[in-house]
Length: 405
Image 1 (cartoon, rainbow, N blue to C red):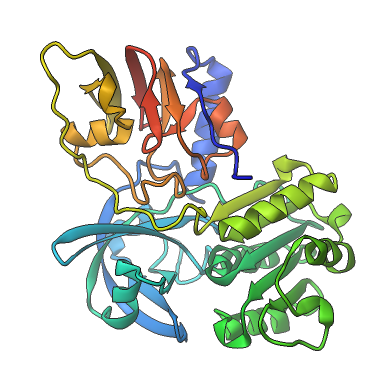
Image 2 (image 1 turned 135 degrees about the vertical axis):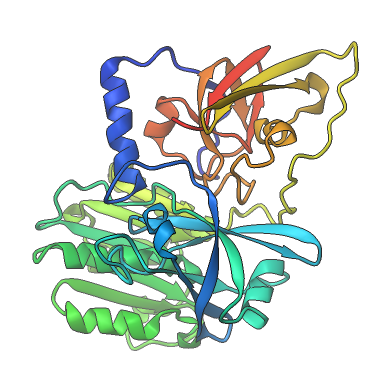
């Protein structure tokens, strides 16, 4: 079963004053520790360090110039989009920030940010980053965003659990370090699965974190192709093994918040199993690094659409950076809102264009849409009318959306 794909979304009515206040508070919390979130934009950053993690992955650190530090405030679990022209084609990819919120920073915002990039088979950007990216190179980096963050108001005595596979460890590194540092009584349990010990990203950092918090961090490495002393930690995580891990090592009844990150199959297995044993889905955050839908095509930056004179169209009205614009889209073209917006506003935000990263998120104010996939929006965001514009197709004559809310 796939993560819930939203089939129909309908614009809410005019928000009440309480709703507007709630929106402001949420935006401030998601945007970072020191102020409200502005719409994410690209900034050109210099590569300060490239550090090998495994044979197939590197950690890339970017220097943040003083004038841009406020734009890169972030919360543990958020991600950035990277943009680079390779072989004449613009390529965008999203990567989670792998350091705790306060790492590399000071009182005026972070001085550096770091991401981990794992080479995918046939992946154009990840292969380039692994083999050619070097210190001094410049890349366009979008300011941090995302809601794969803790919603606990108080971390004292909190127990947070994470399950990650492969490069899914990246946001959980930041989350674990932040949760443990913010309270002397918080606990973090991390189950991390890889094929072998040679594939474990951040092995030294995880060991250091365990040494720093020996009684509050429970770290369990599961290796699918390498024998470990404990049989439970040797082999692929299937449903029977997951249920034993949960029952013997994690103890779900003691967990206040869950974070799941990795490939589609593992994340969905964990979501289904947690739901089956009675864990409230409202306490489960998840993020996908792949969707299980096979190799995706590169996103199209506003492919041309010809509107014939007598052809039925739908009008898309949108607000971006305080400017309102409209564009007509032919009904027969089944064009996404993002593609239509890009035809008149090339700076409309997007990264993966696959419904995974949430970069193109906007609020539907009027009309209705069909959303093909949704791997990024939380249920409460859907209730408030948010949609992924890369996956949304208008189903009414007029659709009004706002990127700025």
